[in-house]
Amino acid sequence: MTSVDLSGGCLCGAIRYRIAGAPVFVGQCYCKDCQKATGTGHATVIGVMETQLSIAGEPAVYASRGESGGQVQRHFCPVCASRLYTAADSAGPVRMVQAGTLDDPNAVTPTVAIYVKDALSWDRIDAAVVKFDRLPPAAPRA
Image (cartoon, rainbow, N blue to C red; front, side, top):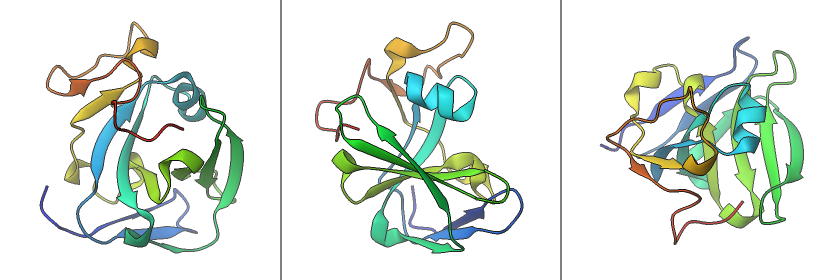
């Protein structure tokens, strides 16, 4: 992916964000937590460094424990409840921005799928992406 800036925001417009530079990764997560948080079969996320992400507005945060026992923080609009991005203790400075909140969601293409062991039978995984039953071996654990 080329180094272009991406922008997006919540449904009501109360929160806007900008991603400066190319994402670290674009992927789909099929874990049970993402299914519950999205209300569908998977979450499509853009992994960026915290320093690449600038936020205008004040997101609310819901914190829970991930599979590893570390804290996972889901940031969302307190007005319209749109999920914006996720931070995890174990992911350090990487933030996972919800791809559907981009002004142009077609600006990114997933190249990896994780937690495919939890994929629902009706949610099709693109044959072109690299698949992992859990996280890739060198990936941070949430």
